[in-house]
Amino acid sequence: MVSQSSRLSVLLPASVSFKLCLIAFFAITVLPLAAQDYYHQGKVAYGQRNYEKARQLFERSLETNPSNGNPCFYLGYMLDNANRRDLAVNQYRRGVDSNMDADLRDKAFWKIVLYYKYVQDWDNLAIYSEKFLRYRDIQQVKDFLEEAKEKRDPALARTRELTASAEKKKEAGDLKGAEADYKSILANKWDEHTAWNLAALEMQLKNYSEALGYYDRLIEQKPSWEYHYKRGVAHYSLRNYEESLADFSRARSLNKKPDAGFRYYLSIGEGLSLLESGKQNESRAKLIEASKLRKSPVALAGLARIELATGNRKLAEGYAAKLETGDRERDLLQALLYFNSDQKAEDRKAGREAFVKWMASIKSDETFQPSYSASLFLLGKQACILSDPELGLNALERIPESDQQKIGDHVRISFPMEKRNAGDIYREFDFYYGKALLDRNRTDAALNRLRRVQDLPIARYYMAAAFARKADEKNAMDYLQRAVEKNPEYWDYAKKNADFQALARSSADFAYFIQNNGKVRQSGPDPVRGNVDANKNETKKDSGP
Image (tube, rainbow, N blue to C red; front, top):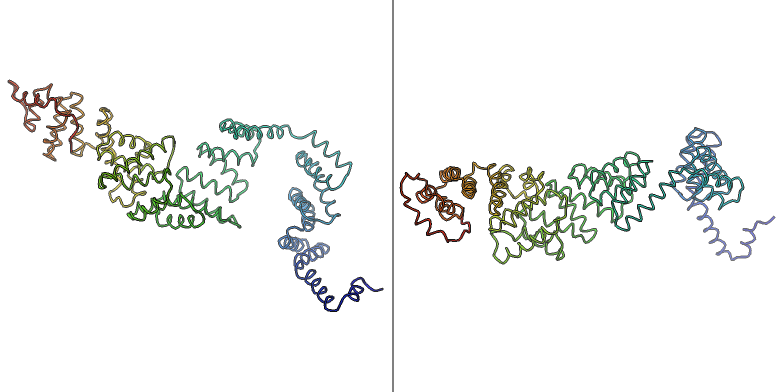
């Protein structure tokens, strides 16, 4: 009997017949050879009861051709025989969702539905009964489906209801309501998908510690690059920079097929964590890497801050100029660059406007990074130096109290060109804070702050002015005397100070003390009263040191 291929070769020219044979050869032997070979060798090893070798061959077959579900059946069957039915059913499920021979698909579906009926997993029984019925119309499977619908866990129905409610509330902007729904689900039963959604919602609500708790549990149960990346962001938001860098590194190692978007966000996260840690050179490399992946205002702003912090003013100006007008990072950079007593009046004015805009942009921020606190101090200090106490006080009071205690460290980390030690910076903060409070007529608060640095002659001078404002003549004299012991020039300032003048007008003793550079008046007529009254209508603008 002549085969069909032989008949075909007779009908076709020799050259065409040769080409077809060549194509058939490659189609059969070259393309699927490895996968088919591993699969058939696996079946041979399975028939010989060499199950470990069979497992390895079937797994190699799947690696070579993941769309072939046949090896999954044998892998599942071997797990079944080892009493690992939970793992076996995963293999069967993988198989039926791929391409399988009809007989193996039938057997796999039966294994799946019988297992879920046995463990009373009504949700999965319903799902795979429906899939089986789309493939084969079997009455017993229909009965399984009806039973699953009747016996589904009521809590799961409640979960679906609450999930739908949470999604609807999120769309309407009711984030707190959505949060409550998700928490209700988890209070009843742990659910990975719900925990993921709730963690993202907590991040949106700036409840970073709560989000971190959910990411911890998700990672504990199923480590993945998505969970590690998100936990890294949570750690960054909580200022846990070493932990954020560790999570970003873990995410990088777990993601075996990173796309450009993943690499960009990871580089941004690493760059900002390194920046807040004071590792400017490492941060620069990460942010440059991010800026190559996509146009990024965040990367540009970070690079500008690095160059400014390390004294490269021209580079900082170049990066800042590339940011769009209205970007709050641009406003901050413009303020740091130009709101300074060393700049021209026109530049200082522009810098002040940028400072005011930036302050308005962070008004509602409940938390921010230490570099913002350091910037608030440097700009608030400049406002005080430039006789703008209201703006200076607004900036210094905006610094969180926890950061006030560490302001020296924050400034040195964020602006390494500041060569003073952390303790001196903190004392400077206390002085300017106290001076701004005094200028804004918050006298008692000013005294409390200035007392912390009363060893400074200038702090003593302004404490004396504060006591004079409170008509406390004794302390005013005492602190002024202690101030001028270190700097006699303070007498000249004191004679022009509005607070001292006001006390002098009501006290002959204090008037004599001021006019005679600390001499105490002897009892008798007031010899200088006329001179003090002559200054009564002078301006009260402070011309102090």
